[in-house]
Length: 241
Image 1 (cartoon, rainbow, N blue to C red):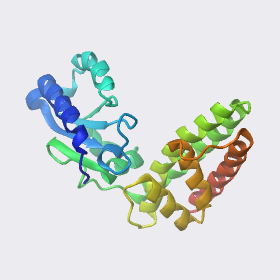
Image 2 (spheres, helix red, strand yellow; image 1 turned 90 degrees about the horizontal axis):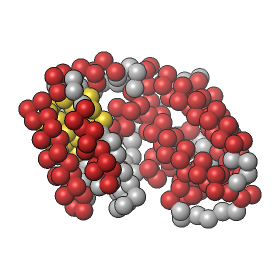
Image 3 (spheres, rainbow, N blue to C red; image 1 turned 180 degrees about the horizontal axis):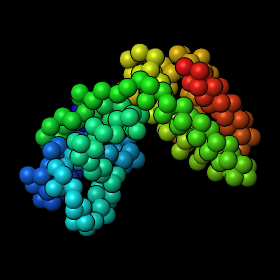
């Protein structure tokens, strides 16, 4: 489990108070997960992801939440995920990557730890990895075409897609039986090592997202071509696992 930075404490406390006022005793747990509980958190840039687990009665009416969404967004919170324990248990075969990524870094704000004992079937995880890689490979290719060579669009495609691949990378490391690092940078490095990917390429792609690297249009296009080729190779590897 991770810890929440001090600067976030007040925001999380207010969020907890809001959820408490909405659902009271119907709350099973409130959990913050993702970059907010890791070294990757960047003030005023990173969203805060929250999972609210409710009773069956509590989740039957979410309409009152509507009036809080704008307030939470202004505070830097992404729209919370509202689930029940039964939904989580019944959905592990459908969304193993998503639940694995929650398990990777989270902090219990209130109530029961519903994530710690989740058991994910490696077969389900491998299948979703294959499906996600193939789907995102198609999106990368289509996105590359649709940028029309525009530098801003090329940079945006790289920045938005690399985060999605990091989630898949965590799952692939789990499949390999490896310890999954906490930070995105370390996840990329470990995945490149295990699957023989070009570590320098993926390091540059992540640096483009963070703004640490500035490239010309031609350089961005070259990176994207190499990026697409690498994901294609990775997809074929996972297909044969």
